[in-house]
Length: 68
Image 1 (cartoon, rainbow, N blue to C red):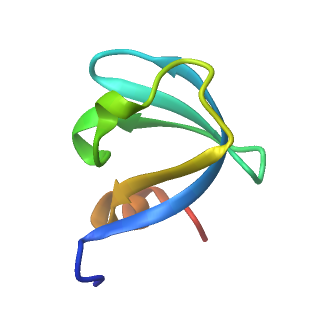
Image 2: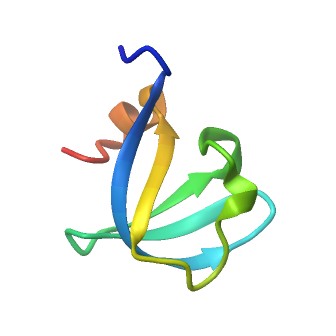
């Protein structure tokens, strides 16, 4: 496990943003809803943002097989 407990994932675009979750389009073409509670500084992301990196809790990334 990393020291910060977050993994940094490259994404293409934020497709939707709600107060509780972000729909993220990743570089491999997959889309995933990510709960805001599992994103570092989730308020920094909004609809249309990208490309960039998003920091997601390590346990959630593993559970959803993100970044593999």
